[in-house]
Length: 112
Image (cartoon, rainbow, N blue to C red; front, top):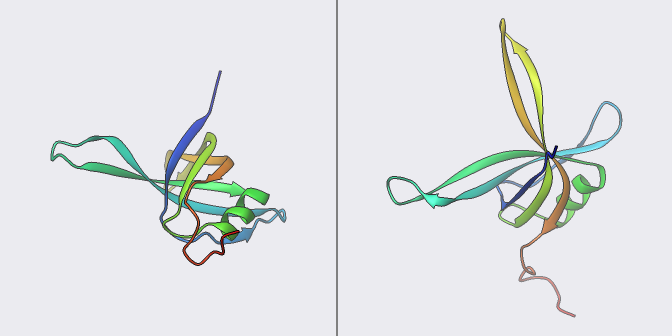
């Protein structure tokens, strides 16, 4: 059995790292991933996916990436049962295991 997902997209917003109750660093990023096919109107739709990063992945991504940067994500899909107002629903999350920074050098970075 295999539970693996690979995504490439743009960061929708800057990433903020928080601390969980257990003291681990955690961050959530929203990734805009365009679909590879056009809709009935001839346009490409985009999916906005929330991803959770832990510890060094959260810290490094928030340090080196900002809104609009392109990143590659490798991770797994995890489901969580949520009960609200006498109803149950399954919430799907993407847990990030590895992030690859794909945007080129920034204009203001020194070369060399």
